[in-house]
Length: 239
Image (cartoon, rainbow, N blue to C red):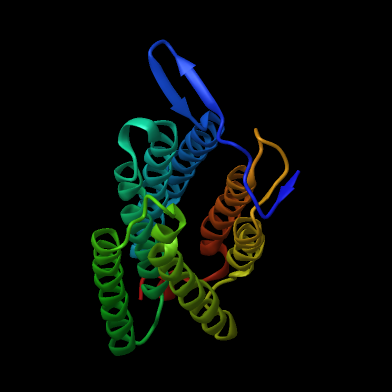
């Protein structure tokens, strides 16, 4: 076990290919498959409302983001820092879909429209901020800096949509949001493991810990979405 520093990256020689971090690629690939399965489950339960549509989009976009991110780890010796860009951008877009799903439930049209515009503005600013960061900062020397904008965007989006809006809805009996909150609570330790650089083994490092926590969070989100119809009248769901 290591704290405060990372294990050496695992090298994987396949024919003439010098690959890195196969454990990260395997973890991201498994998360991709899980996300796609959950997306189909949500889509199957969908009634065509924005809530279900946007949760489906979240799982698909974030799943693809994770898979390509895994390739970025695996192909680091060939793609370099550019192999990280796609997953950084798409992770921002994925959070936008969660925001839109939760905002779609707001009963007052004027406020709902304002929240939608806020979400769009945050999306644009986050994508623009990430672009500036990529162009102005030497991310090769410290790849973790590239996660700054996506992390801030995720924190703001999750807190405001799942926690703040979720609390408002819960108070007004617009559905039961406990599984969304449980998912967030489960994911929170991931930041601690990443910040403190806590890894249990070379084949199960801090990224692998995050993968496990994220998988559980995905399942909690899905349970929350699938159970949602049972806790809210159709007329409220359809706004």
